[in-house]
Each structure stands twice: as structure tokens, then as C-alpha cells.
Length: 272
Image (cartoon, rainbow, N blue to C red):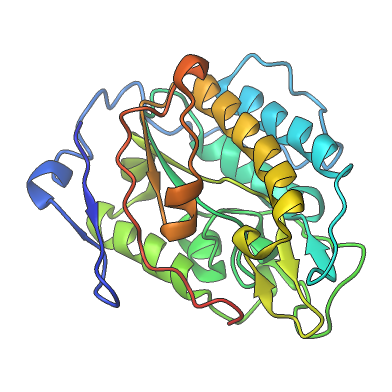
């Protein structure tokens, strides 16, 4: 299925409706949601991840990346680092186990968590209202080791909205109606699971890091992305935002993102 995404300045996301009207087509029986599926809200990393499902293999890649990321260190301008794949593991795992089903060929790729999105919910572009009310994700959210007083983690109780997440999920809710229609063909992921902040609480994207530290970070994230692409059987990666589009690696021999169409979707301004 060919998918094109366009963006220009502040204009909203536009997609070819002739192509997208087929989003809900396919093997409905194969992708029918399991009403008996209950999210495994077990915080212990690695528990029950036996590799028997696509979701299990995907989560294993993320947990392995966490191990490598803990060995990195960051200097100015970074003063705070949040990793929602640790303190928000429960809702993140709920999201993956619910919607990462296999048979999905297109991956929407963001850069890293936003302060009122994934940082709060553990879900990529995870604006709280959409995560809680549309995606029906549940789970307890803890706290990073050190929190900035202006960027406190409140989990699914957060009342502030993340613009990029609201735009992203709002568009697909309007287009698809139900999450199951969207996730028949698509999945959503962030290249880097870490959120960086300066002393004022300003959000820092990976391109703003010291070059050597940025390269070490993205090398690990690129490798994990290629492993995730292979685990999911993805054939097209769409970078959401200029940073993700530029950073998306060519995974060629790893199950490949070559041939994917990278086109930017607007993101929330840095620091808001």
C-alpha cells in the first residue's frame, strides 16, 4: 500500500484520501482485536518476554536498548534525562502488547519523547487524552530519578496537552474512527526513548546535544531501530518531523527501511 504524507509550514497534515480509504481493508479476521486480551502490567523488565510474539520481540529490543543507554553520559546543556521506557514501562508495554500485532508494514517514526506526551504516558506522540480515551491504554507511571520542577511526571493524570501528539492521533482518529483500523497496517515508534532538558526545563532534541554524545546515542538508537524494523517486518518508515526524517537510518540488510518515504509532520516547538 502506497502512503504519502505532506506538510508545509503550519498547514495541517494532508494525505491522499484515495489511498487512505483503503486503510481499513485487508484480512479483518487476521487483525480482529482479541476481546480477552489484557495488558500484562508487570514492571519487571524482561519478564515473560519469550519472543513468541511480535510484541514480545519488539519489547525485547527496547529493553536491550535501555541497557546500552544507561552506559552513556551527557554534558552541557543537558541537566535532566527522562526515560519513559523505565518509569512508564507499564502503559508502554500495554500499548505494544495491544497494538503491535504483526502484519503491519508501515512505521511512523518520531524522534524522542515530548514533555507532555510520551514522557507522561510511555506512548509515542502520547498526548494523554488520546492515549487514555481513544487508545484505552492503562498502567501506573512512576518517576525518573531526578525531575525538573517545571516538568513533573503526572502520568495519565497530566492535564497539559502535547500539540504534536494531539495533531497526530487526532488526524488518525478522524480518518480511521477506531484504533484497530489504524493499527491493521501501521505502528508508531520513537527513534530515541530519552527526553533531554536543560537547567530551565527547556526540551532539548538529540540534534542539540554535543556532537560526540549525539553520535554515540544515535548509533545505539539506529541499531535498535533496525532490529525493531526486522522484528515487525516493516517495509516503509515515515519520519514524523524533520529531525526524525533526517535521522532515520537505512537498515538495508537488517530488514530494511530502504524505499521508505520520509516526509515531515509538524512537531511542537522546542521547549513548550
